[in-house]
Length: 138
Image (cartoon, rainbow, N blue to C red; front, side, top):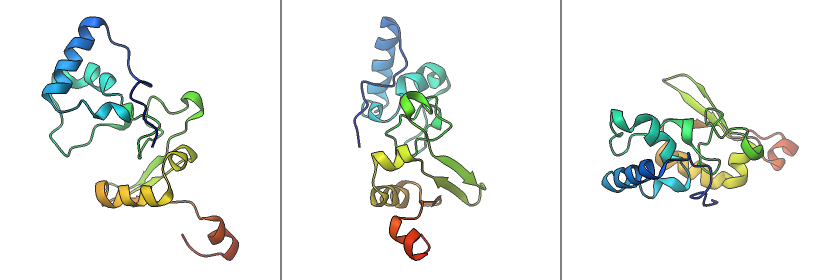
């Protein structure tokens, strides 16, 4: 997965950047900037508190290299990056990865991610060439 720590970040003033760095250090969020625009999330939401460990941040600030980068991200459509699509129901959610998702992670890496991080979500991978050729189900 590409490291986008220095790309796709909300611009902050010098004083905001100092506040953000302090907040990130206090809340253990210094490593989250590789695949998430934590500055954008902080600027919009930090005054309301920080999600508890294990809780997810919204898709709004996911960078194109995040495993579940979606069309709900502000970076969807930027530089040709298209996000995947969430669907299904609350009881049976699904995620259909985009070409961008599949360029950043292999099918196996996505399957492992969903197994470990999104176990209740059905990953809707496109059929492989062999599956298309022989009519097998994905």
